[in-house]
Image (cartoon, rainbow, N blue to C red; front, side, top):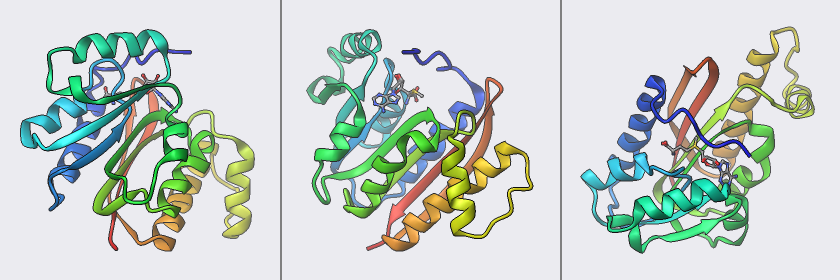
Length: 207
Ligand SMILES: C[S@@+](CC[C@H](N)C(=O)[O-])C[C@H]1O[C@@H](n2cnc3c(N)ncnc32)[C@H](O)[C@@H]1O
């Protein structure tokens, strides 16, 4: 499994700030955050500067990265967090309605890999009203069946470069979830990070 190596990417920093700003703009201040902090928990530390009332469930599936995270959290505000070494999909699967105020899926992976767990968050209302869902996704590595399926359902042409089809399919997939389950998009930031074409989406639950 590859370890996250682009901690200092410039656009990554802008994406982090969008996530932090959306969370800061939430009226409710205390609640639980489910996130993928890698070893440095940069977003969580930024959030702490503005809000000391959030609690965290921190997930990391890479064992080496997880050990570094545990070490880095010692003697910090994060030491009381729930730590899970494994796939965040398992946490999402066992979560209850309204369990989290915010979920930050900084996957940097592709949508087709996480389709079902993302859909479940919307469908099961795992985020409280007013809370946010942030997702970072890469345009690379997307399963062609996922793209073709969305194009068929929405009668879209396939006459575009594959990356553009992936971007459009990802937007359609998330927008349909949002409309069906009463979320609104508050941010869309397509960006390049270490030559990877990335997309950040932030949604807020309306009711
Ligand atoms: C892009 S990094 C997170 C970066 C961090 N949020 C930051 O701002 O620097 C993604 C991390 O999550 C882990 N990860 C990715 N997908 C995961 C999954 N489905 N379950 C658990 N960990 C995952 C990766 O191993 C990696 O360390």
